[in-house]
Length: 67
Image 1 (cartoon, one colour):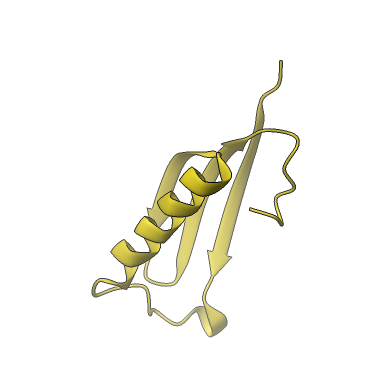
Image 2 (cartoon, helix red, strand yellow):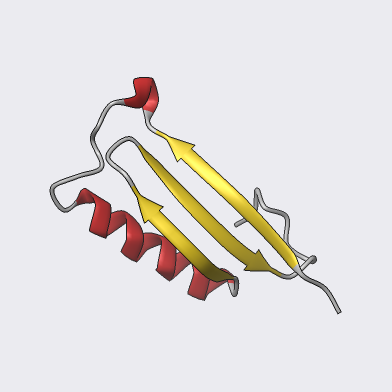
């Protein structure tokens, strides 16, 4: 039995507000595709114009850098 959750925050370079005008939805789609491919679950996701918050639940066999 395990519960392994990570809270990830990605910031854009120089905190420029580039995640808008459709790029934010494209990022969400890519992250959900990666979750399906690597078999981890996205519990919460918020895309702001200059950063992304992501809460993931995964198996202990996977390193966070591999996902």
